[in-house]
Structure formats: structure tokens, C-alpha cells
Amino acid sequence: MQYADTALIVIDVQNDFCTGGALAVPDGEAVVPLINAMLPDYGACILTQDWHPGGHSSFASQHAGKEPFGTVEMSYGTQVLWPDHCVQGTQGAEFHADLQTDAANMIIRKGFRRDIDSYSAFFENDRTTPTGLTGYLRTINVQKVTLAGLATDFCVAYSALDAARQGFDVTVDLRACRAIDLEGSLEYALSQMAQNSVRVVD
Ligand code: VGL
Ligand code: ZN
Image 1: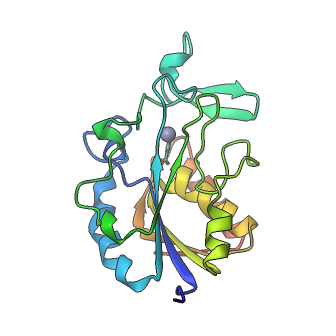
Image 2 (image 1 turned 180 degrees about the horizontal axis):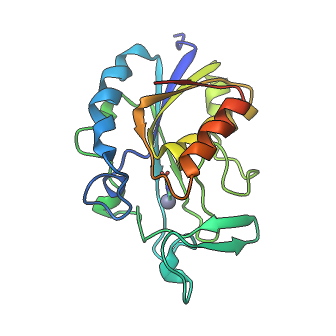
């Protein structure tokens, strides 16, 4: 059986990134019907799931005197600190109930090591520890990827930039993405994608 050469990668459409969640992305749940409508057009669909152990080092609660949305220096560089979110096994870490997860042929969990965050579906935040997704996509003969999901300026952008760096032909469908937009992070992410051969549709 031959997979289509384009995969849809759906980033972090989880309760904690939707309204009422611990790290709610404004209007985050609006991506769900759009992504559901996109699914039939792709021969392969990969979902990512932000999946942190309790006490993860990206949580502000683990750093004395720090607040969410501040930063801290880690061995691998500057890390934004977040409210506790997407803790393994919690309701907040579950996919949005309306997301058609049955269509997925792979779920990549990321951020499960306490001492390192992972925004990207391809590499952890040191930009070198692989999740294995590149190998999976190459093995099933995928050359083009389309990304959608949450959040545009963090996990979607990091995934898109890594995908381009790995040699995939990359499109981000901004209609099916929503951003956190922290101190210019959306504008920065869009400019990085534009400079690194990521095609953006909106
Ligand atoms: C994300 C911050 C922390 C994301 C995940 O999915 O964009 N952002 N963890
Ligand atoms: Zn996270």
C-alpha cells in the first residue's frame, strides 16, 4: 500500500490549549472543525500531544520567584516558563473531544522528559534530540507536510522550521492555527518561517 506523499501534522489540539484550559490559546478550539475537514485530503495524519510529567522544568511553578510567561536559562538556552499544563494522564492533556483522532495513524508525544521542553514535533528544545518523526515520515515516503494546530508561534512554528530543516516541503495552514502571541512572538515566528522556505497559507 502506498501512502500519499503529503502528511498532515496536527499540533497539540488539547484541552489545556483551548478555552478554559491551563494555557488557553485565544480561540484555540476554532481550529477543530477546520482540521477535521482537512483530514480526508491527506494520506497520512500525525497528531502531536504535549505530554509533561508533573513538575516539568518548563513550569513556572518549579522555579522559585518566577511567574508564568517569564523566562529562565536552561542548559539548552532560554526557556519560556508556562503555567502547569498538559500533565500526563490529566483531562487537560487529552485531545479536544471534537477532534477526529480516529483518522490519525500516529500520535507523537513530546515534552515527557522533565529537564527539557519540546515544542517541535521533530526535535526537543535543544534542537538536537530527535522524537523520531523524521524517520517515520521518510519510511512511509512522505515528502510534503502541512501543519495546523496550536500554538502558531510556538509548537507549530518550531515544528515547521524543523521540518524545513529536515528537507520536507512545508506548508502551514494559518486558518487552522491559533497563536499565544507573547511579546511579538507571532510576528517573529512568521518572519522566521518566511525566511526558511515555509509556505504559509491564510
Ligand atoms: C506549547 C507552550 C508550552 C504549544 C506547548 O503547543 O505551542 N506552548 N507547551
Ligand atoms: Zn508544553
